[in-house]
Image (cartoon, rainbow, N blue to C red):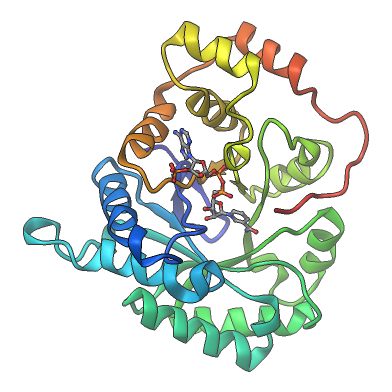
Length: 284
Ligand SMILES: NC(=O)c1ccc[n+]([C@@H]2O[C@H](COP(=O)([O-])OP(=O)(O)OC[C@H]3O[C@@H](n4cnc5c(N)ncnc54)[C@H](OP(=O)(O)O)[C@@H]3O)[C@@H](O)[C@H]2O)c1
């Protein structure tokens, strides 16, 4: 698996697995666990989650996938790069520490590799960063970052004590949502802060696009794979598609091998033009 370097010195895989909407319905639990385990078998060792997903349910599904395998695939914690997020309303000094401890319990682990503020709320950012620093010092998190931060948020965060410790910004980024290419992505690139691109296939809405379909047909892959491969072509970007289906997990993993030609990239630019002016960061 290709990796990027975080400013903290950790390496992070460029492709992982999302878990939004996992842990919400007991009927889907086994397929979610099986999909995550299959992804781990294929080397998709980055798992993205949040205390919000299934109100803790997604973290419990992950724990089962990672720590309760049988035989040789017993506890695989050491091979996994775990990302979780704190709700903004829990992001006070004491609140974030308590939220992290609850996540650790659900995840059945004693550390989270990367802990993010899910989006900016009313708690002063300095307080959240203070909590993140304390969590890092106690070894409960290896590093920390933010999510859904636009350029101005990143700029103000970087001025705060603890701000330089922010190692990533997880944002909505896919062919339909290229606004960050105007200023946020270049700003992060200049500082070697990787962007984590969420909703890479726009939660399925990109799958019916004709340009994607045409490229997919010609290359004998799926439209989802082309959309993911396009993101993997962008420098300094980590991609976290979510799937609870083994077939899709296999496709998403294989997107890593799909190199788009200059002609295909130009066709995608034609259909999904890059921004020509600042666009406010969108959120799903
Ligand atoms: N920080 C934030 O605020 C934020 C916001 C949104 C998402 N996220 C993170 O980013 C992850 C990904 O985003 P997302 O879940 O919103 O959307 P997404 O990954 O763009 O799309 C997920 C949807 O696409 C389907 N799918 C996945 N692979 C497919 C394939 N190869 N072919 C066809 N369909 C496929 C999935 O269905 P199946 O399960 O049936 O395959 C699911 O319905 C989330 O799970 C979450 O971890 C973060």
